[in-house]
Length: 228
Image 1 (cartoon, rainbow, N blue to C red):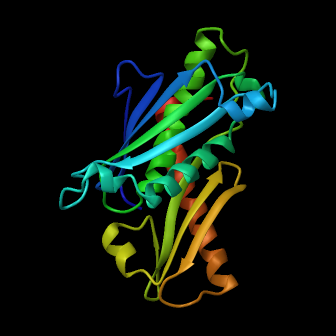
Image 2 (image 1 turned 120 degrees about the vertical axis):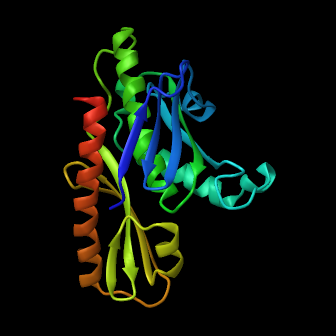
């Protein structure tokens, strides 16, 4: 795995924020709390909150400048939905109450693994926002069900690689992103055979490797968050 670095409380006014780094990949993750819920929840007369996410890359996060208009594409929408789904999986939405937490993930520097870094940093920002809600007596107990993290794993030739950089990802025969709770329960598995198909045995090996990497990420999350 590449080196993990976390800079907490990066933005003064946000309910939770951090810069999460996996090697050269750096993502600014920010949690914002609003005392309202989306219209579809109001229409259903549900008594629970919502967690959502928005992902984007900065124009010079890559080698050449990319127009902001071009950055708002299908890939950004797909990753936004992934991050939102992943973070909702670890939240008891009824305990959150009728409010929305939006996690903004802005890639400052991209070198592979931006979606996994967004989930990992997004969880930290989300957990900070939950603690602030508790401190302000807006919720009685923490709605988080447990720690959650994500990591990429794949095969470059015959070698299995954990936490792929952009260079490794570009030549990988198999590429997979895995989101998992601390107890090992899976939230999402995105796997693709780029160069050749893979066996059930290969899948099990990648899941085992991912668990090792996710344990390492959660260990670093706990250093900055303490207990939930």
